[in-house]
Each structure stands twice: as C-alpha cells, then as structure tokens.
Image (cartoon, rainbow, N blue to C red):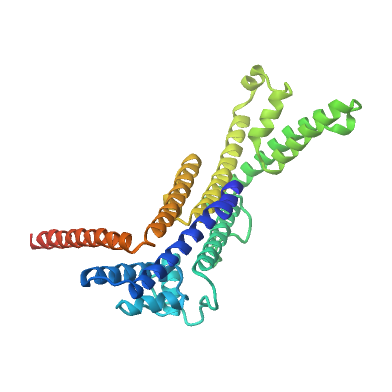
Length: 348
C-alpha cells in the first residue's frame, strides 16, 4: 500500500499533469492556427468543432482557467457553467449526491486546481471511510462509544442470556490467550538468558509473542508454541472440546478483525486509484490495473507530443483536420443509429 501511494505521487500524478498540460498546449496551438492559417469553410468549421470539444473537456479539469473559457466562447461553444457551479457539481459527483447542498455547507474556494480539489475530496472521503471502519471494528470488539446512540430499552430475558453467554465466551478467550502467553514468556524471556546469541533470538521471539498477545492473535501464539515444541500431535488430541470451542471463537474474532483491516486497505487503494471500492479486485489485480493505467497514460502523453510536433506544419494540420472530420461524421452516424434503435424499441 505504501509503495502504491508513493508511486501514485511520483509516477501517476506527474504523468496526468503532463498530459493535461499538453492538452492545454494543443488547444492553444489549434486556436492560434485558426487565426494565422487560411482554411476552407469546412476545415474551419471542423477546427472550431474540435476546439470547442477539447475546451469542454479541459474546463472540467481546470474550471478556473479563463483562457480555456475564452477560447471555447470564441469558437462558438455553448455557455459553460460558472466556476462555483461547476465545482459544486463535481463535488456532488464525488459524494454521490444528487440533492442540493445545505446552505451552510462549505464549498471549495480560491485558486484551487481541479487536481488539488479531487485529491482533497478523496482524502476527506477516505478519512470518513476509515472512521466508519474503526467504529465497526470497535463494535465487533464490544468497545463503547462505537455505535449510534439510541434510547435504551429494557433487555429481554433472551438478550440477557445472550449477553451473559458472550461475556463468558470473552472471558474464556481472554483466559486461553493469557495461559498460552504466560507459557511462552516463561520459555523465551530474554532476561533469563546469559548467552548473547540466544538472548537475541529470545528477544525476537518475545517481541512476536507480545505482538500476537496484544492483537489477540491466537493463531500466532499457537504457531510460536509449535515452533518451540510445546505443541505435539498428542497434545492436540488430548485437548477437550471446551478448549477447542474457545480456540475457534478466538480465531473467529481475529478473522473478523482481519477482514476489517483488509477492507480498510481496499478503501485506501481505491482512493489511490480514484475509483469506487466496488471496482476493487484482488491485490495482484490492483497492481496490474495500476501498471496498465500508468502505461496507458504515458502512451497518451507520448501520442500528444508526437501529434503536437506533426501539427506544426500547416499541411499536416489540414490533413489532420480531414481525419477529424471523418471521425466526427462517423460518430454522428453512430449517434443517429442509436437514436433510431431506441426509437424503434419504444414503438414496440
């Protein structure tokens, strides 16, 4: 997770910023060419159409850039939302809200770039998600103050019996953990070792035991016992059913805690990628998707750079506009076909 967060800052963000800067440079170059190069009517219309579309995309990334808005207006683009309205819409999209914000709700203000705005919103959402997970974990562990306050109701007999059973289970688990931990401490406490090498080994073992006990990690405590020869097959077979039941309960609680931690890491990973938790897969898949996204972004940067170099020549620019015109016509035909399809479907 730390590596992914670091790479998001050192690799992904610079690539995104570079791509955005090149897109803005391309917009300015096309705008300048429209004023210095003589085009035919169709080519001029195509150029303006391309400029308007590119400006509409870029204004979403840079809502406070007056040059983009000026270029968009100069080439006949429809009125754009003002900065405050656009930021409010973007923020509502990040929150998943469609309703109007409250009157006292704080809105982003000042010369904050779109990238900074999105990063801030992601961090805020991540903090809210982590806090929610913390409360859920505390609720699983029975910590007070982690659930919503509701009016207290009289406990039924069944609820009281269940509470008594859960308290007894928790006491049994605590006692089992303490018993294993004390046995381990008696074997690995470094203060009782005179040999320097053995003292170092026992110090490491003691640290593992302390960490496992603090985290109520029964599995690690049992693993340490097995490493030290305290658990033999005959010992396991001789365990009573109550002991095994207590161990299972402890492992189930630890499993619930691990699942909560995994979800927390997934939330952080989703924030790094800027996607919903719904789209998060396995850790390997996350790394693969991150690498694919970064590679595609770098290819896009290289593509825009090559395009910028080629479009410096008026002849190349005119040929490029012809290709853009063909692409626009294909898209328009696809849009018409789609409208006809859905219209025919409604008739049925």
